[in-house]
Image 1 (spheres, rainbow, N blue to C red):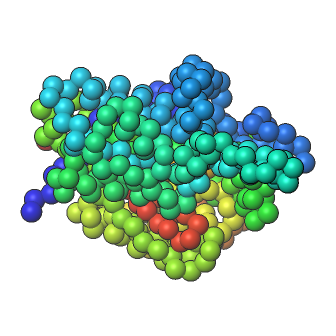
Image 2 (cartoon, rainbow, N blue to C red; image 1 turned 180 degrees about the horizontal axis):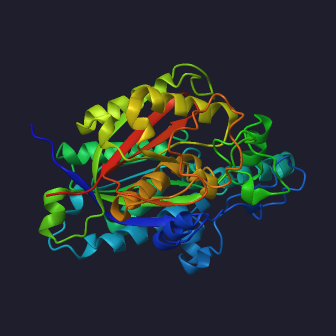
Amino acid sequence: MELKRVVVTGLGAITPIGNDVETTWLNAVAGKSGAAPITHFDASQFKTQFACEVKDFNPNDHFDRKKLRQLDLYAQYAMVAARQAVADSGIEEAANLDRNRVGVIVAAGIGGLHTFEEEAGYYALNGPQQGPKYNPFFIPKMIADIASGHISMEYNYHGPNFGVVSACASSNNAIIDAFNLIRLGKADVFVTGGAEAAIYPAGVGGFNSMHALSTRNDDPEHASRPFSASRDGFVMGEGSVVLILEELEHAKARGAKIYAEVAGGGMSADAYHLTATHPEGLGAILSMRNALEDAGMKPEDIDYINVHGTSTPVGDISEVKAIVEVFGEQAHKLNISSTKSMTGHLLGATGALEAMFSVLSVKNDIVPPTINHEEGDNDENIDYTLNFTFNKAENRPVRAALSNSFGFGGHNATVIVKKYEE
């Protein structure tokens, strides 16, 4: 069967550097950091006391009291981003929209961590005296698939509906699932992406215990520094990004604007370590090659790679090795950047955010920078002759962009987007 073409027709974003798509994109291009001291809880006793939090977000501006009782913060972010994306796409104004063929796949790596902390903490403090008393919304607020459920109920979308959990690869996997279901003819439209809100004691403390987070408490804005020799761990982020993927003829029939075309997706497993990437990037190599093959593209067709680039000592090195292996000479001609240097690491939402940046890079012919790069020559494991976009955005033609996301458990997922052409 002939596979259908899939395009991006809407975007929505709630991120550490902006509460809409335009603000997020402009701040990324300007190289603005979203890192600051943690406000969600008192982090003064933690090794890491800062993060990339969403700012100026008031849930009461978006939901009534009854609805808020049902929503963990991660689901709030997801619903607001989805509303933006649906409005941006104009899909609700489409004549004769078949809601049975509109699906929702919104990922989360963790889900309702704050809800779990509150309920488990309340029982630990009061359970022995009062017995088990849990909020009836505890489970449906906490589970990692519930954002998809809420979005489908809000819009009465009856197509395929589920969540994806593959750690920090989750929302790339969600995008790939939506892409495949549309091109196989199983749906016309998908609301897809990811959401996360884990900047709470269990999240920060858990990652601290693994020595995964930066502890640059005296200088949060410069803490996320991918590819710099002084990098000491990632910076946690939160928020949600949602994309509207649509079958091309369906989009054309209603006169939709088209940001870019989804060209292909690749997946793989490291099968190596619980949390560390393979030191030679073997899983990343396979994921990128699978994505290129799926897209029917060659390495020389890619102009920009939005790397996973978390600012961890081992992870950054293995990804660069993988890029050199897959792209050969083209690795020196394309641009490479890590937008996590500005947004932090949104865990299960990070793939969607970076897919959005890739879409906007293709649309606008701009590569956002990796900020906070001050040194690197003493790190012999990274090839600094590659075209890293350090500290300042670069204007260049971007025919196609590749975005990597890798997760604990060895999950790897790669998405490729390209300029839309008839």
